[in-house]
Image (cartoon, rainbow, N blue to C red; front, side, top):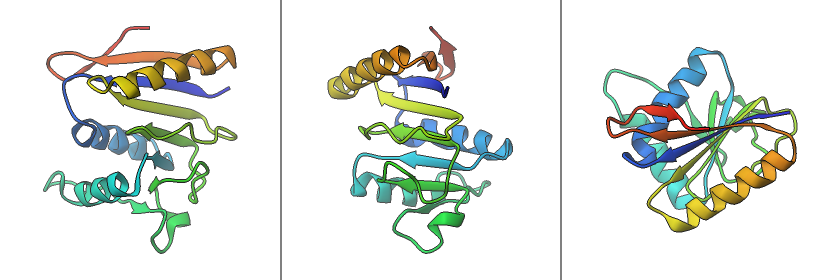
Length: 149
């Protein structure tokens, strides 16, 4: 079964919270896909990841770019990523990515968006009923993650 982590954003935006999690994933040697809800958000996040911090480099690409299958981090709109990632992130209203062969799914949702909150609750119930191991993390005021369930 897939390990599922739900990250409830209450104090920061996806653009601020996602890059450190992607960096940690790469440090662990994981191939990652980030599933997003729209082409505009995918492209905006792509541009942001190139410039979010001067002293770091986060290798990544998009599913419409050359060599998508070789990207260590792939930003995608597809349910099944071209890079064969075993760790998948779903954010910004993206639907559930395919879970076959996935070790870890990280679902990030905006706590100020009612539609994303309701979708996260639905995903929690569905994934739990399928027997996946779930944990729920919420941001504290200082933007750290605190395990709630």
